[in-house]
Amino acid sequence: MNGHCDVIGGAIVTTTEKLSKEIQFLLNGMDTNASPFDSWLVLSGIKTLPVRMDRHAESSMKIARYLDEHPRVKEVFYPGLPSHPGHEIAKKNRWMRWSGFI
Image (cartoon, rainbow, N blue to C red; front, side, top):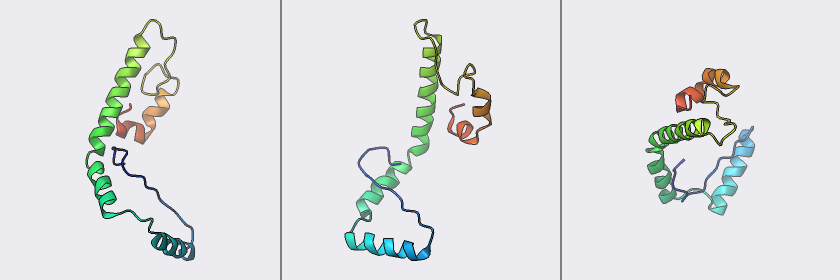
């Protein structure tokens, strides 16, 4: 999420309150929680996430179009291109539209 490859994090999802409390106890005892600095790094990166995702989508579409028009490229598999067999399905996908890949 932070976009700088300087923090490693994750999530543990449980199905019971008992298991959740046991895991919280272990994580606290092993001091594996994110430090304030790590949290600040992630927060700082999250602020630029929308801009970074827009650029990813824009760049990937430019590359896909370039390759699709290149005479030495036989086939391009990118759902954002109208020539892709799954293009219509991708257009219905809310995430694909929201993220700019369509």
